[in-house]
Image (tube, rainbow, N blue to C red):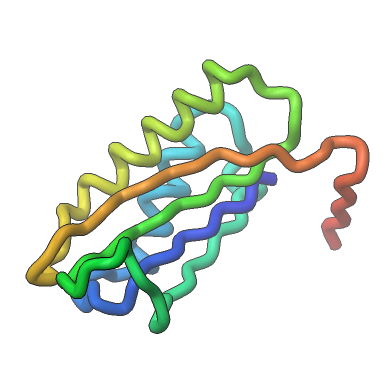
Length: 118
């Protein structure tokens, strides 16, 4: 735990998803809430997407962080803000339009979560 998913639109060719994932993982380690080896992250490039209803070139990068339930709203807010700050380090890649950066923190039910390490 945690699980981090980076979704980004394919009209961001300068975005290096691996570099972004490494920076997001470092940010989570530095938060003091997670052990380094427990962080699982992945990136999904979206080739089919729509932002609003305009035909303008728009793009987005969205981070979903799933953590075991029980953390305070303040802790989750601090995590989302630190991840957003980490995303901003990569700038807003040129698309010829607007780029939205978003972060959400989701709870995974602690009672039903199972994990094995071998």
